[in-house]
Image 1 (cartoon, one colour):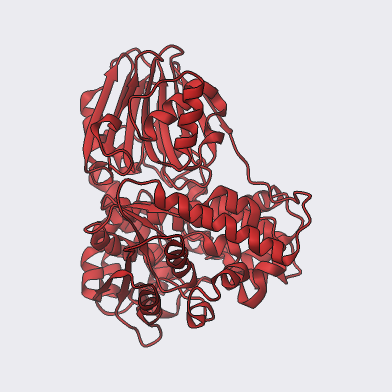
Image 2: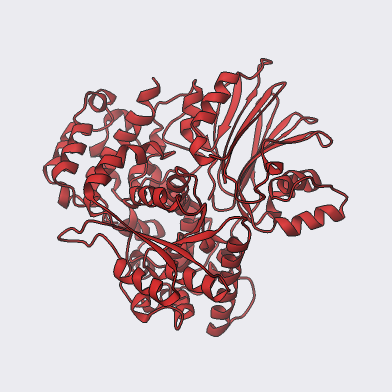
Length: 593
């Protein structure tokens, strides 16, 4: 797991060493073990390495293959690299290292534009083909690994974070009105290729981008999730057995493909508890598990230790239980905001940041349960959507949108007003899913779009801020390809995630399986009062916020007057939404001006 960056000059000038250094300096935490650079002709590439596979210097990057005329920087983990390596050797390719990095480079040499479809894992990579003078960018199927870029007439730059591109300079930091609408409607999700900043874009998941020496680019998908029927008739037992086998394969791959110990982020919910059980069942010994909890609120508990403790007791894991007081949450908020490649409003972003700090002292790799709710229909809104009678968009809007369009217009200044961009996006994505059943269309939208820029991005950003690699077996593409076709009624049984509950019976306590759906609670960022309220009031009343002119002052004041009752449909704080974006802009954009 690493941080990557680079610059391709389009004007005949040589890349600037200072630009590369500034980008690398912002990626250091993603890769604390080694820094590498490549600079020749019109191209410069940089790499920060977190050593997980092949710990020797043989796998340091950038990887240069003089014979093939290729240069690579790569971030991620390829779980089938050993099989690909053997196949490439049979084709006559020779290897100098034992890791997955060299496999990615030679896979491009062997299979060209078809190479990405052969990679099984999470990845973002850039390959410079010196002979053809073109730059190839690629991102994994579910966008687990980030890849941002910016372009002018003079140069093309890419990096693992937007902060690296901002540090490089010469970026249009004006607000993208379409992205702003998505951000405040879809729980801070801004689907690729947009970001909130007009001058920074991101490669969509499951896509290749090829940029030639003149700056002309071609972007196209190498994989698409098909939610339509596959023609195979399955009984309920068939579905459960195939799902269990696919999940076990996913967990096994993410355990064995590492030359360092692999831990588990144990929240106390069904998903992470099942990961521990499957790892133990698969022969994993000396399992390391980690849980975090926060202060209780009168209306919400701040931890789920009573459930995680049961898993620890059953499987005898080496467990770290971390309790974070509210004072530390507030104190560390600026650090967490600085680690967000894009502004996030999920309360658990800060939780993951503080958890990852502690976990990184013990292991370099963890498995996490992100994706299970989106793949297996675990959230409370799915059954309500399933039984609606309105149009696809209305059924989705009434349970998911943080704000309707009318409220959005009352919130932003006239300069950012416009049509209902989010309604158009949702309608297009649901229509393109290809599933007959409404719920499966929603889940397709979730796993290909929404999850990418909410929980998945959150986990990557917050763990990599501490040089910790998070692996997400529930987003194994073979598992998702199977479950997306599963009948909705099977997924929704017993309140949702029935297949996982059935698999878990006998492996984890029924009390964990049958408990109400839990969320990673940080009550202080939901029920805002005291010092947290003062903190957010100061942000929104600041000179920077007022001069930016993003929000209508009367809307801000109304939210500040009654913050604890101003919640979205997903029970997020509208005040935190406003403050989080403004604070991110102050910390990450204003600071470079």
